[in-house]
Length: 162
Image (cartoon, rainbow, N blue to C red; front, side):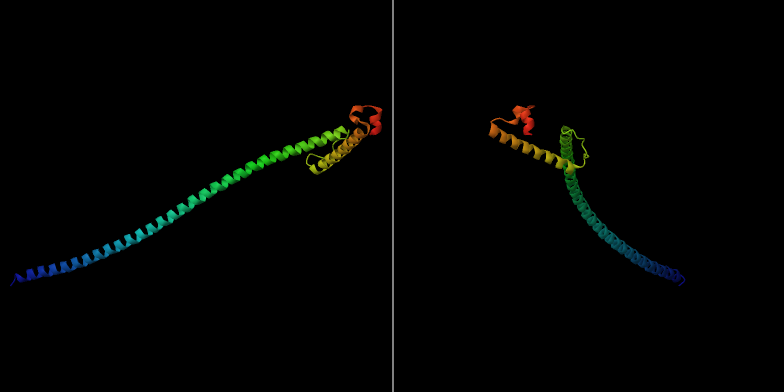
């Protein structure tokens, strides 16, 4: 009988070890399931983030293309504006030059500054109207006398006709 006690203790220890082992196996299984859930959740999050990143990349490419189209349009408009400005400046210079020539021809100092195009054009228009009247008079003279005032430059008849 003395031998039964150590065997009983051994059996009891084995039962206790087995119970602890089962508990640890259950804990390990629970940890494994929690890790599996966490991995699955992380995989879903990463997949969602990849989808969001793909959408953002698509939007970025579309926005970049639109930006490049607008940049091209702005460049074309700027180029047109520069050409137009050069053309306008050339035209303003020509008007100013004609105005100055007409004023000097009359022996009068030009009064209107370069930027006062309206005044310059009014003066040019008046000069053109005067020249049209002179042309009409010359045509009438040619029709009546058979010769124009051009042939009488510097003569008394021309001075009298004017």
